[in-house]
Amino acid sequence: MKEPILVSALANGAKRVPMSLAFALALMLMHLNAAAQGVNLGTATNFAVLAGSTITSTGPTVINGGDVGVSSSAGIAGFPPATISSPYTTHLGDAVALQAQSDLTTAYHTAAGLAPTGILTGQGLGGLTLTPGVYLFAGSAQLTGTLTLNDQGNPDALFVFQIGSTLTTATGSSVETINDPSSPGTRVFWQVGSSATLGTDTAFEGNILALASITLDADATNLDGRVMAMDGAVTLDINSITAPPAEVIGGSGSGGGSAPDTESTLLLLGSGLTALFAIGRRVSVLLR
Image (cartoon, rainbow, N blue to C red):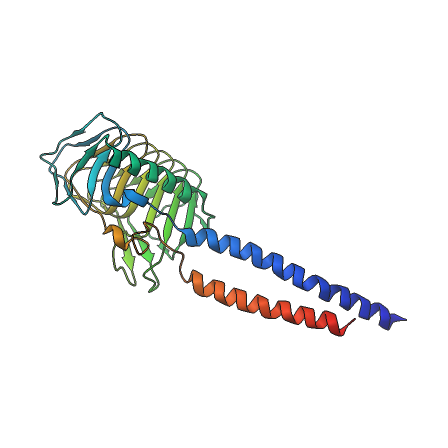
């Protein structure tokens, strides 16, 4: 009497296997698809500095690799002594700046909406070595010392830092990329819930997307990336800002980045789960 019961149980279990596998695959695909989207800056990739209200430089800041723009008509001050390397220029409340701010807003919310792969709330960034991923700070983030970003040999490695309130760096701090830093700061995004302040002599990498204001302190604060404030002002003082080429970010000018090995991972997951799905069906047929 026990054998028919066992066969029936196995048959019912086998029938459920394909459904369970399909559900698991759907969840994995959704997670990987969110990571693969990266952060697309759109036309904002053409800017090295972008602000919602004003941009002011109180010293001979040097800006390379992108335009300087404000979406309002409030103005840009301190140029000169600050300089913008040719062929880049300024945009003051024009259609180009407005579109860039719109794309920045989209990128900001995209970055904020990615699923975190690591929680760093309450930790200092100094002394950490991180691999590609999405890192969450529920509150503020502080960098004192050196943060190392390990690309692991992947030129498309993506780092996203989701910061609930402020981002602050101490004097002499730095962000460094290792293992294939083909274009420093290209696929590093700092989504800041309020304001960001980079301290004196900071060497920083990444695209800062701040909801409010951004301040770069004096004495050659170097930044490989972009400085972008959605609503507030950007304040500069004897800084060096070098935006990576727009066409490099995400490839083909997409303005984003991709999670490492996403396509390969999807292929392996798809192949493996398809095989398990087939096995489940075969077991179900044999037990009928």
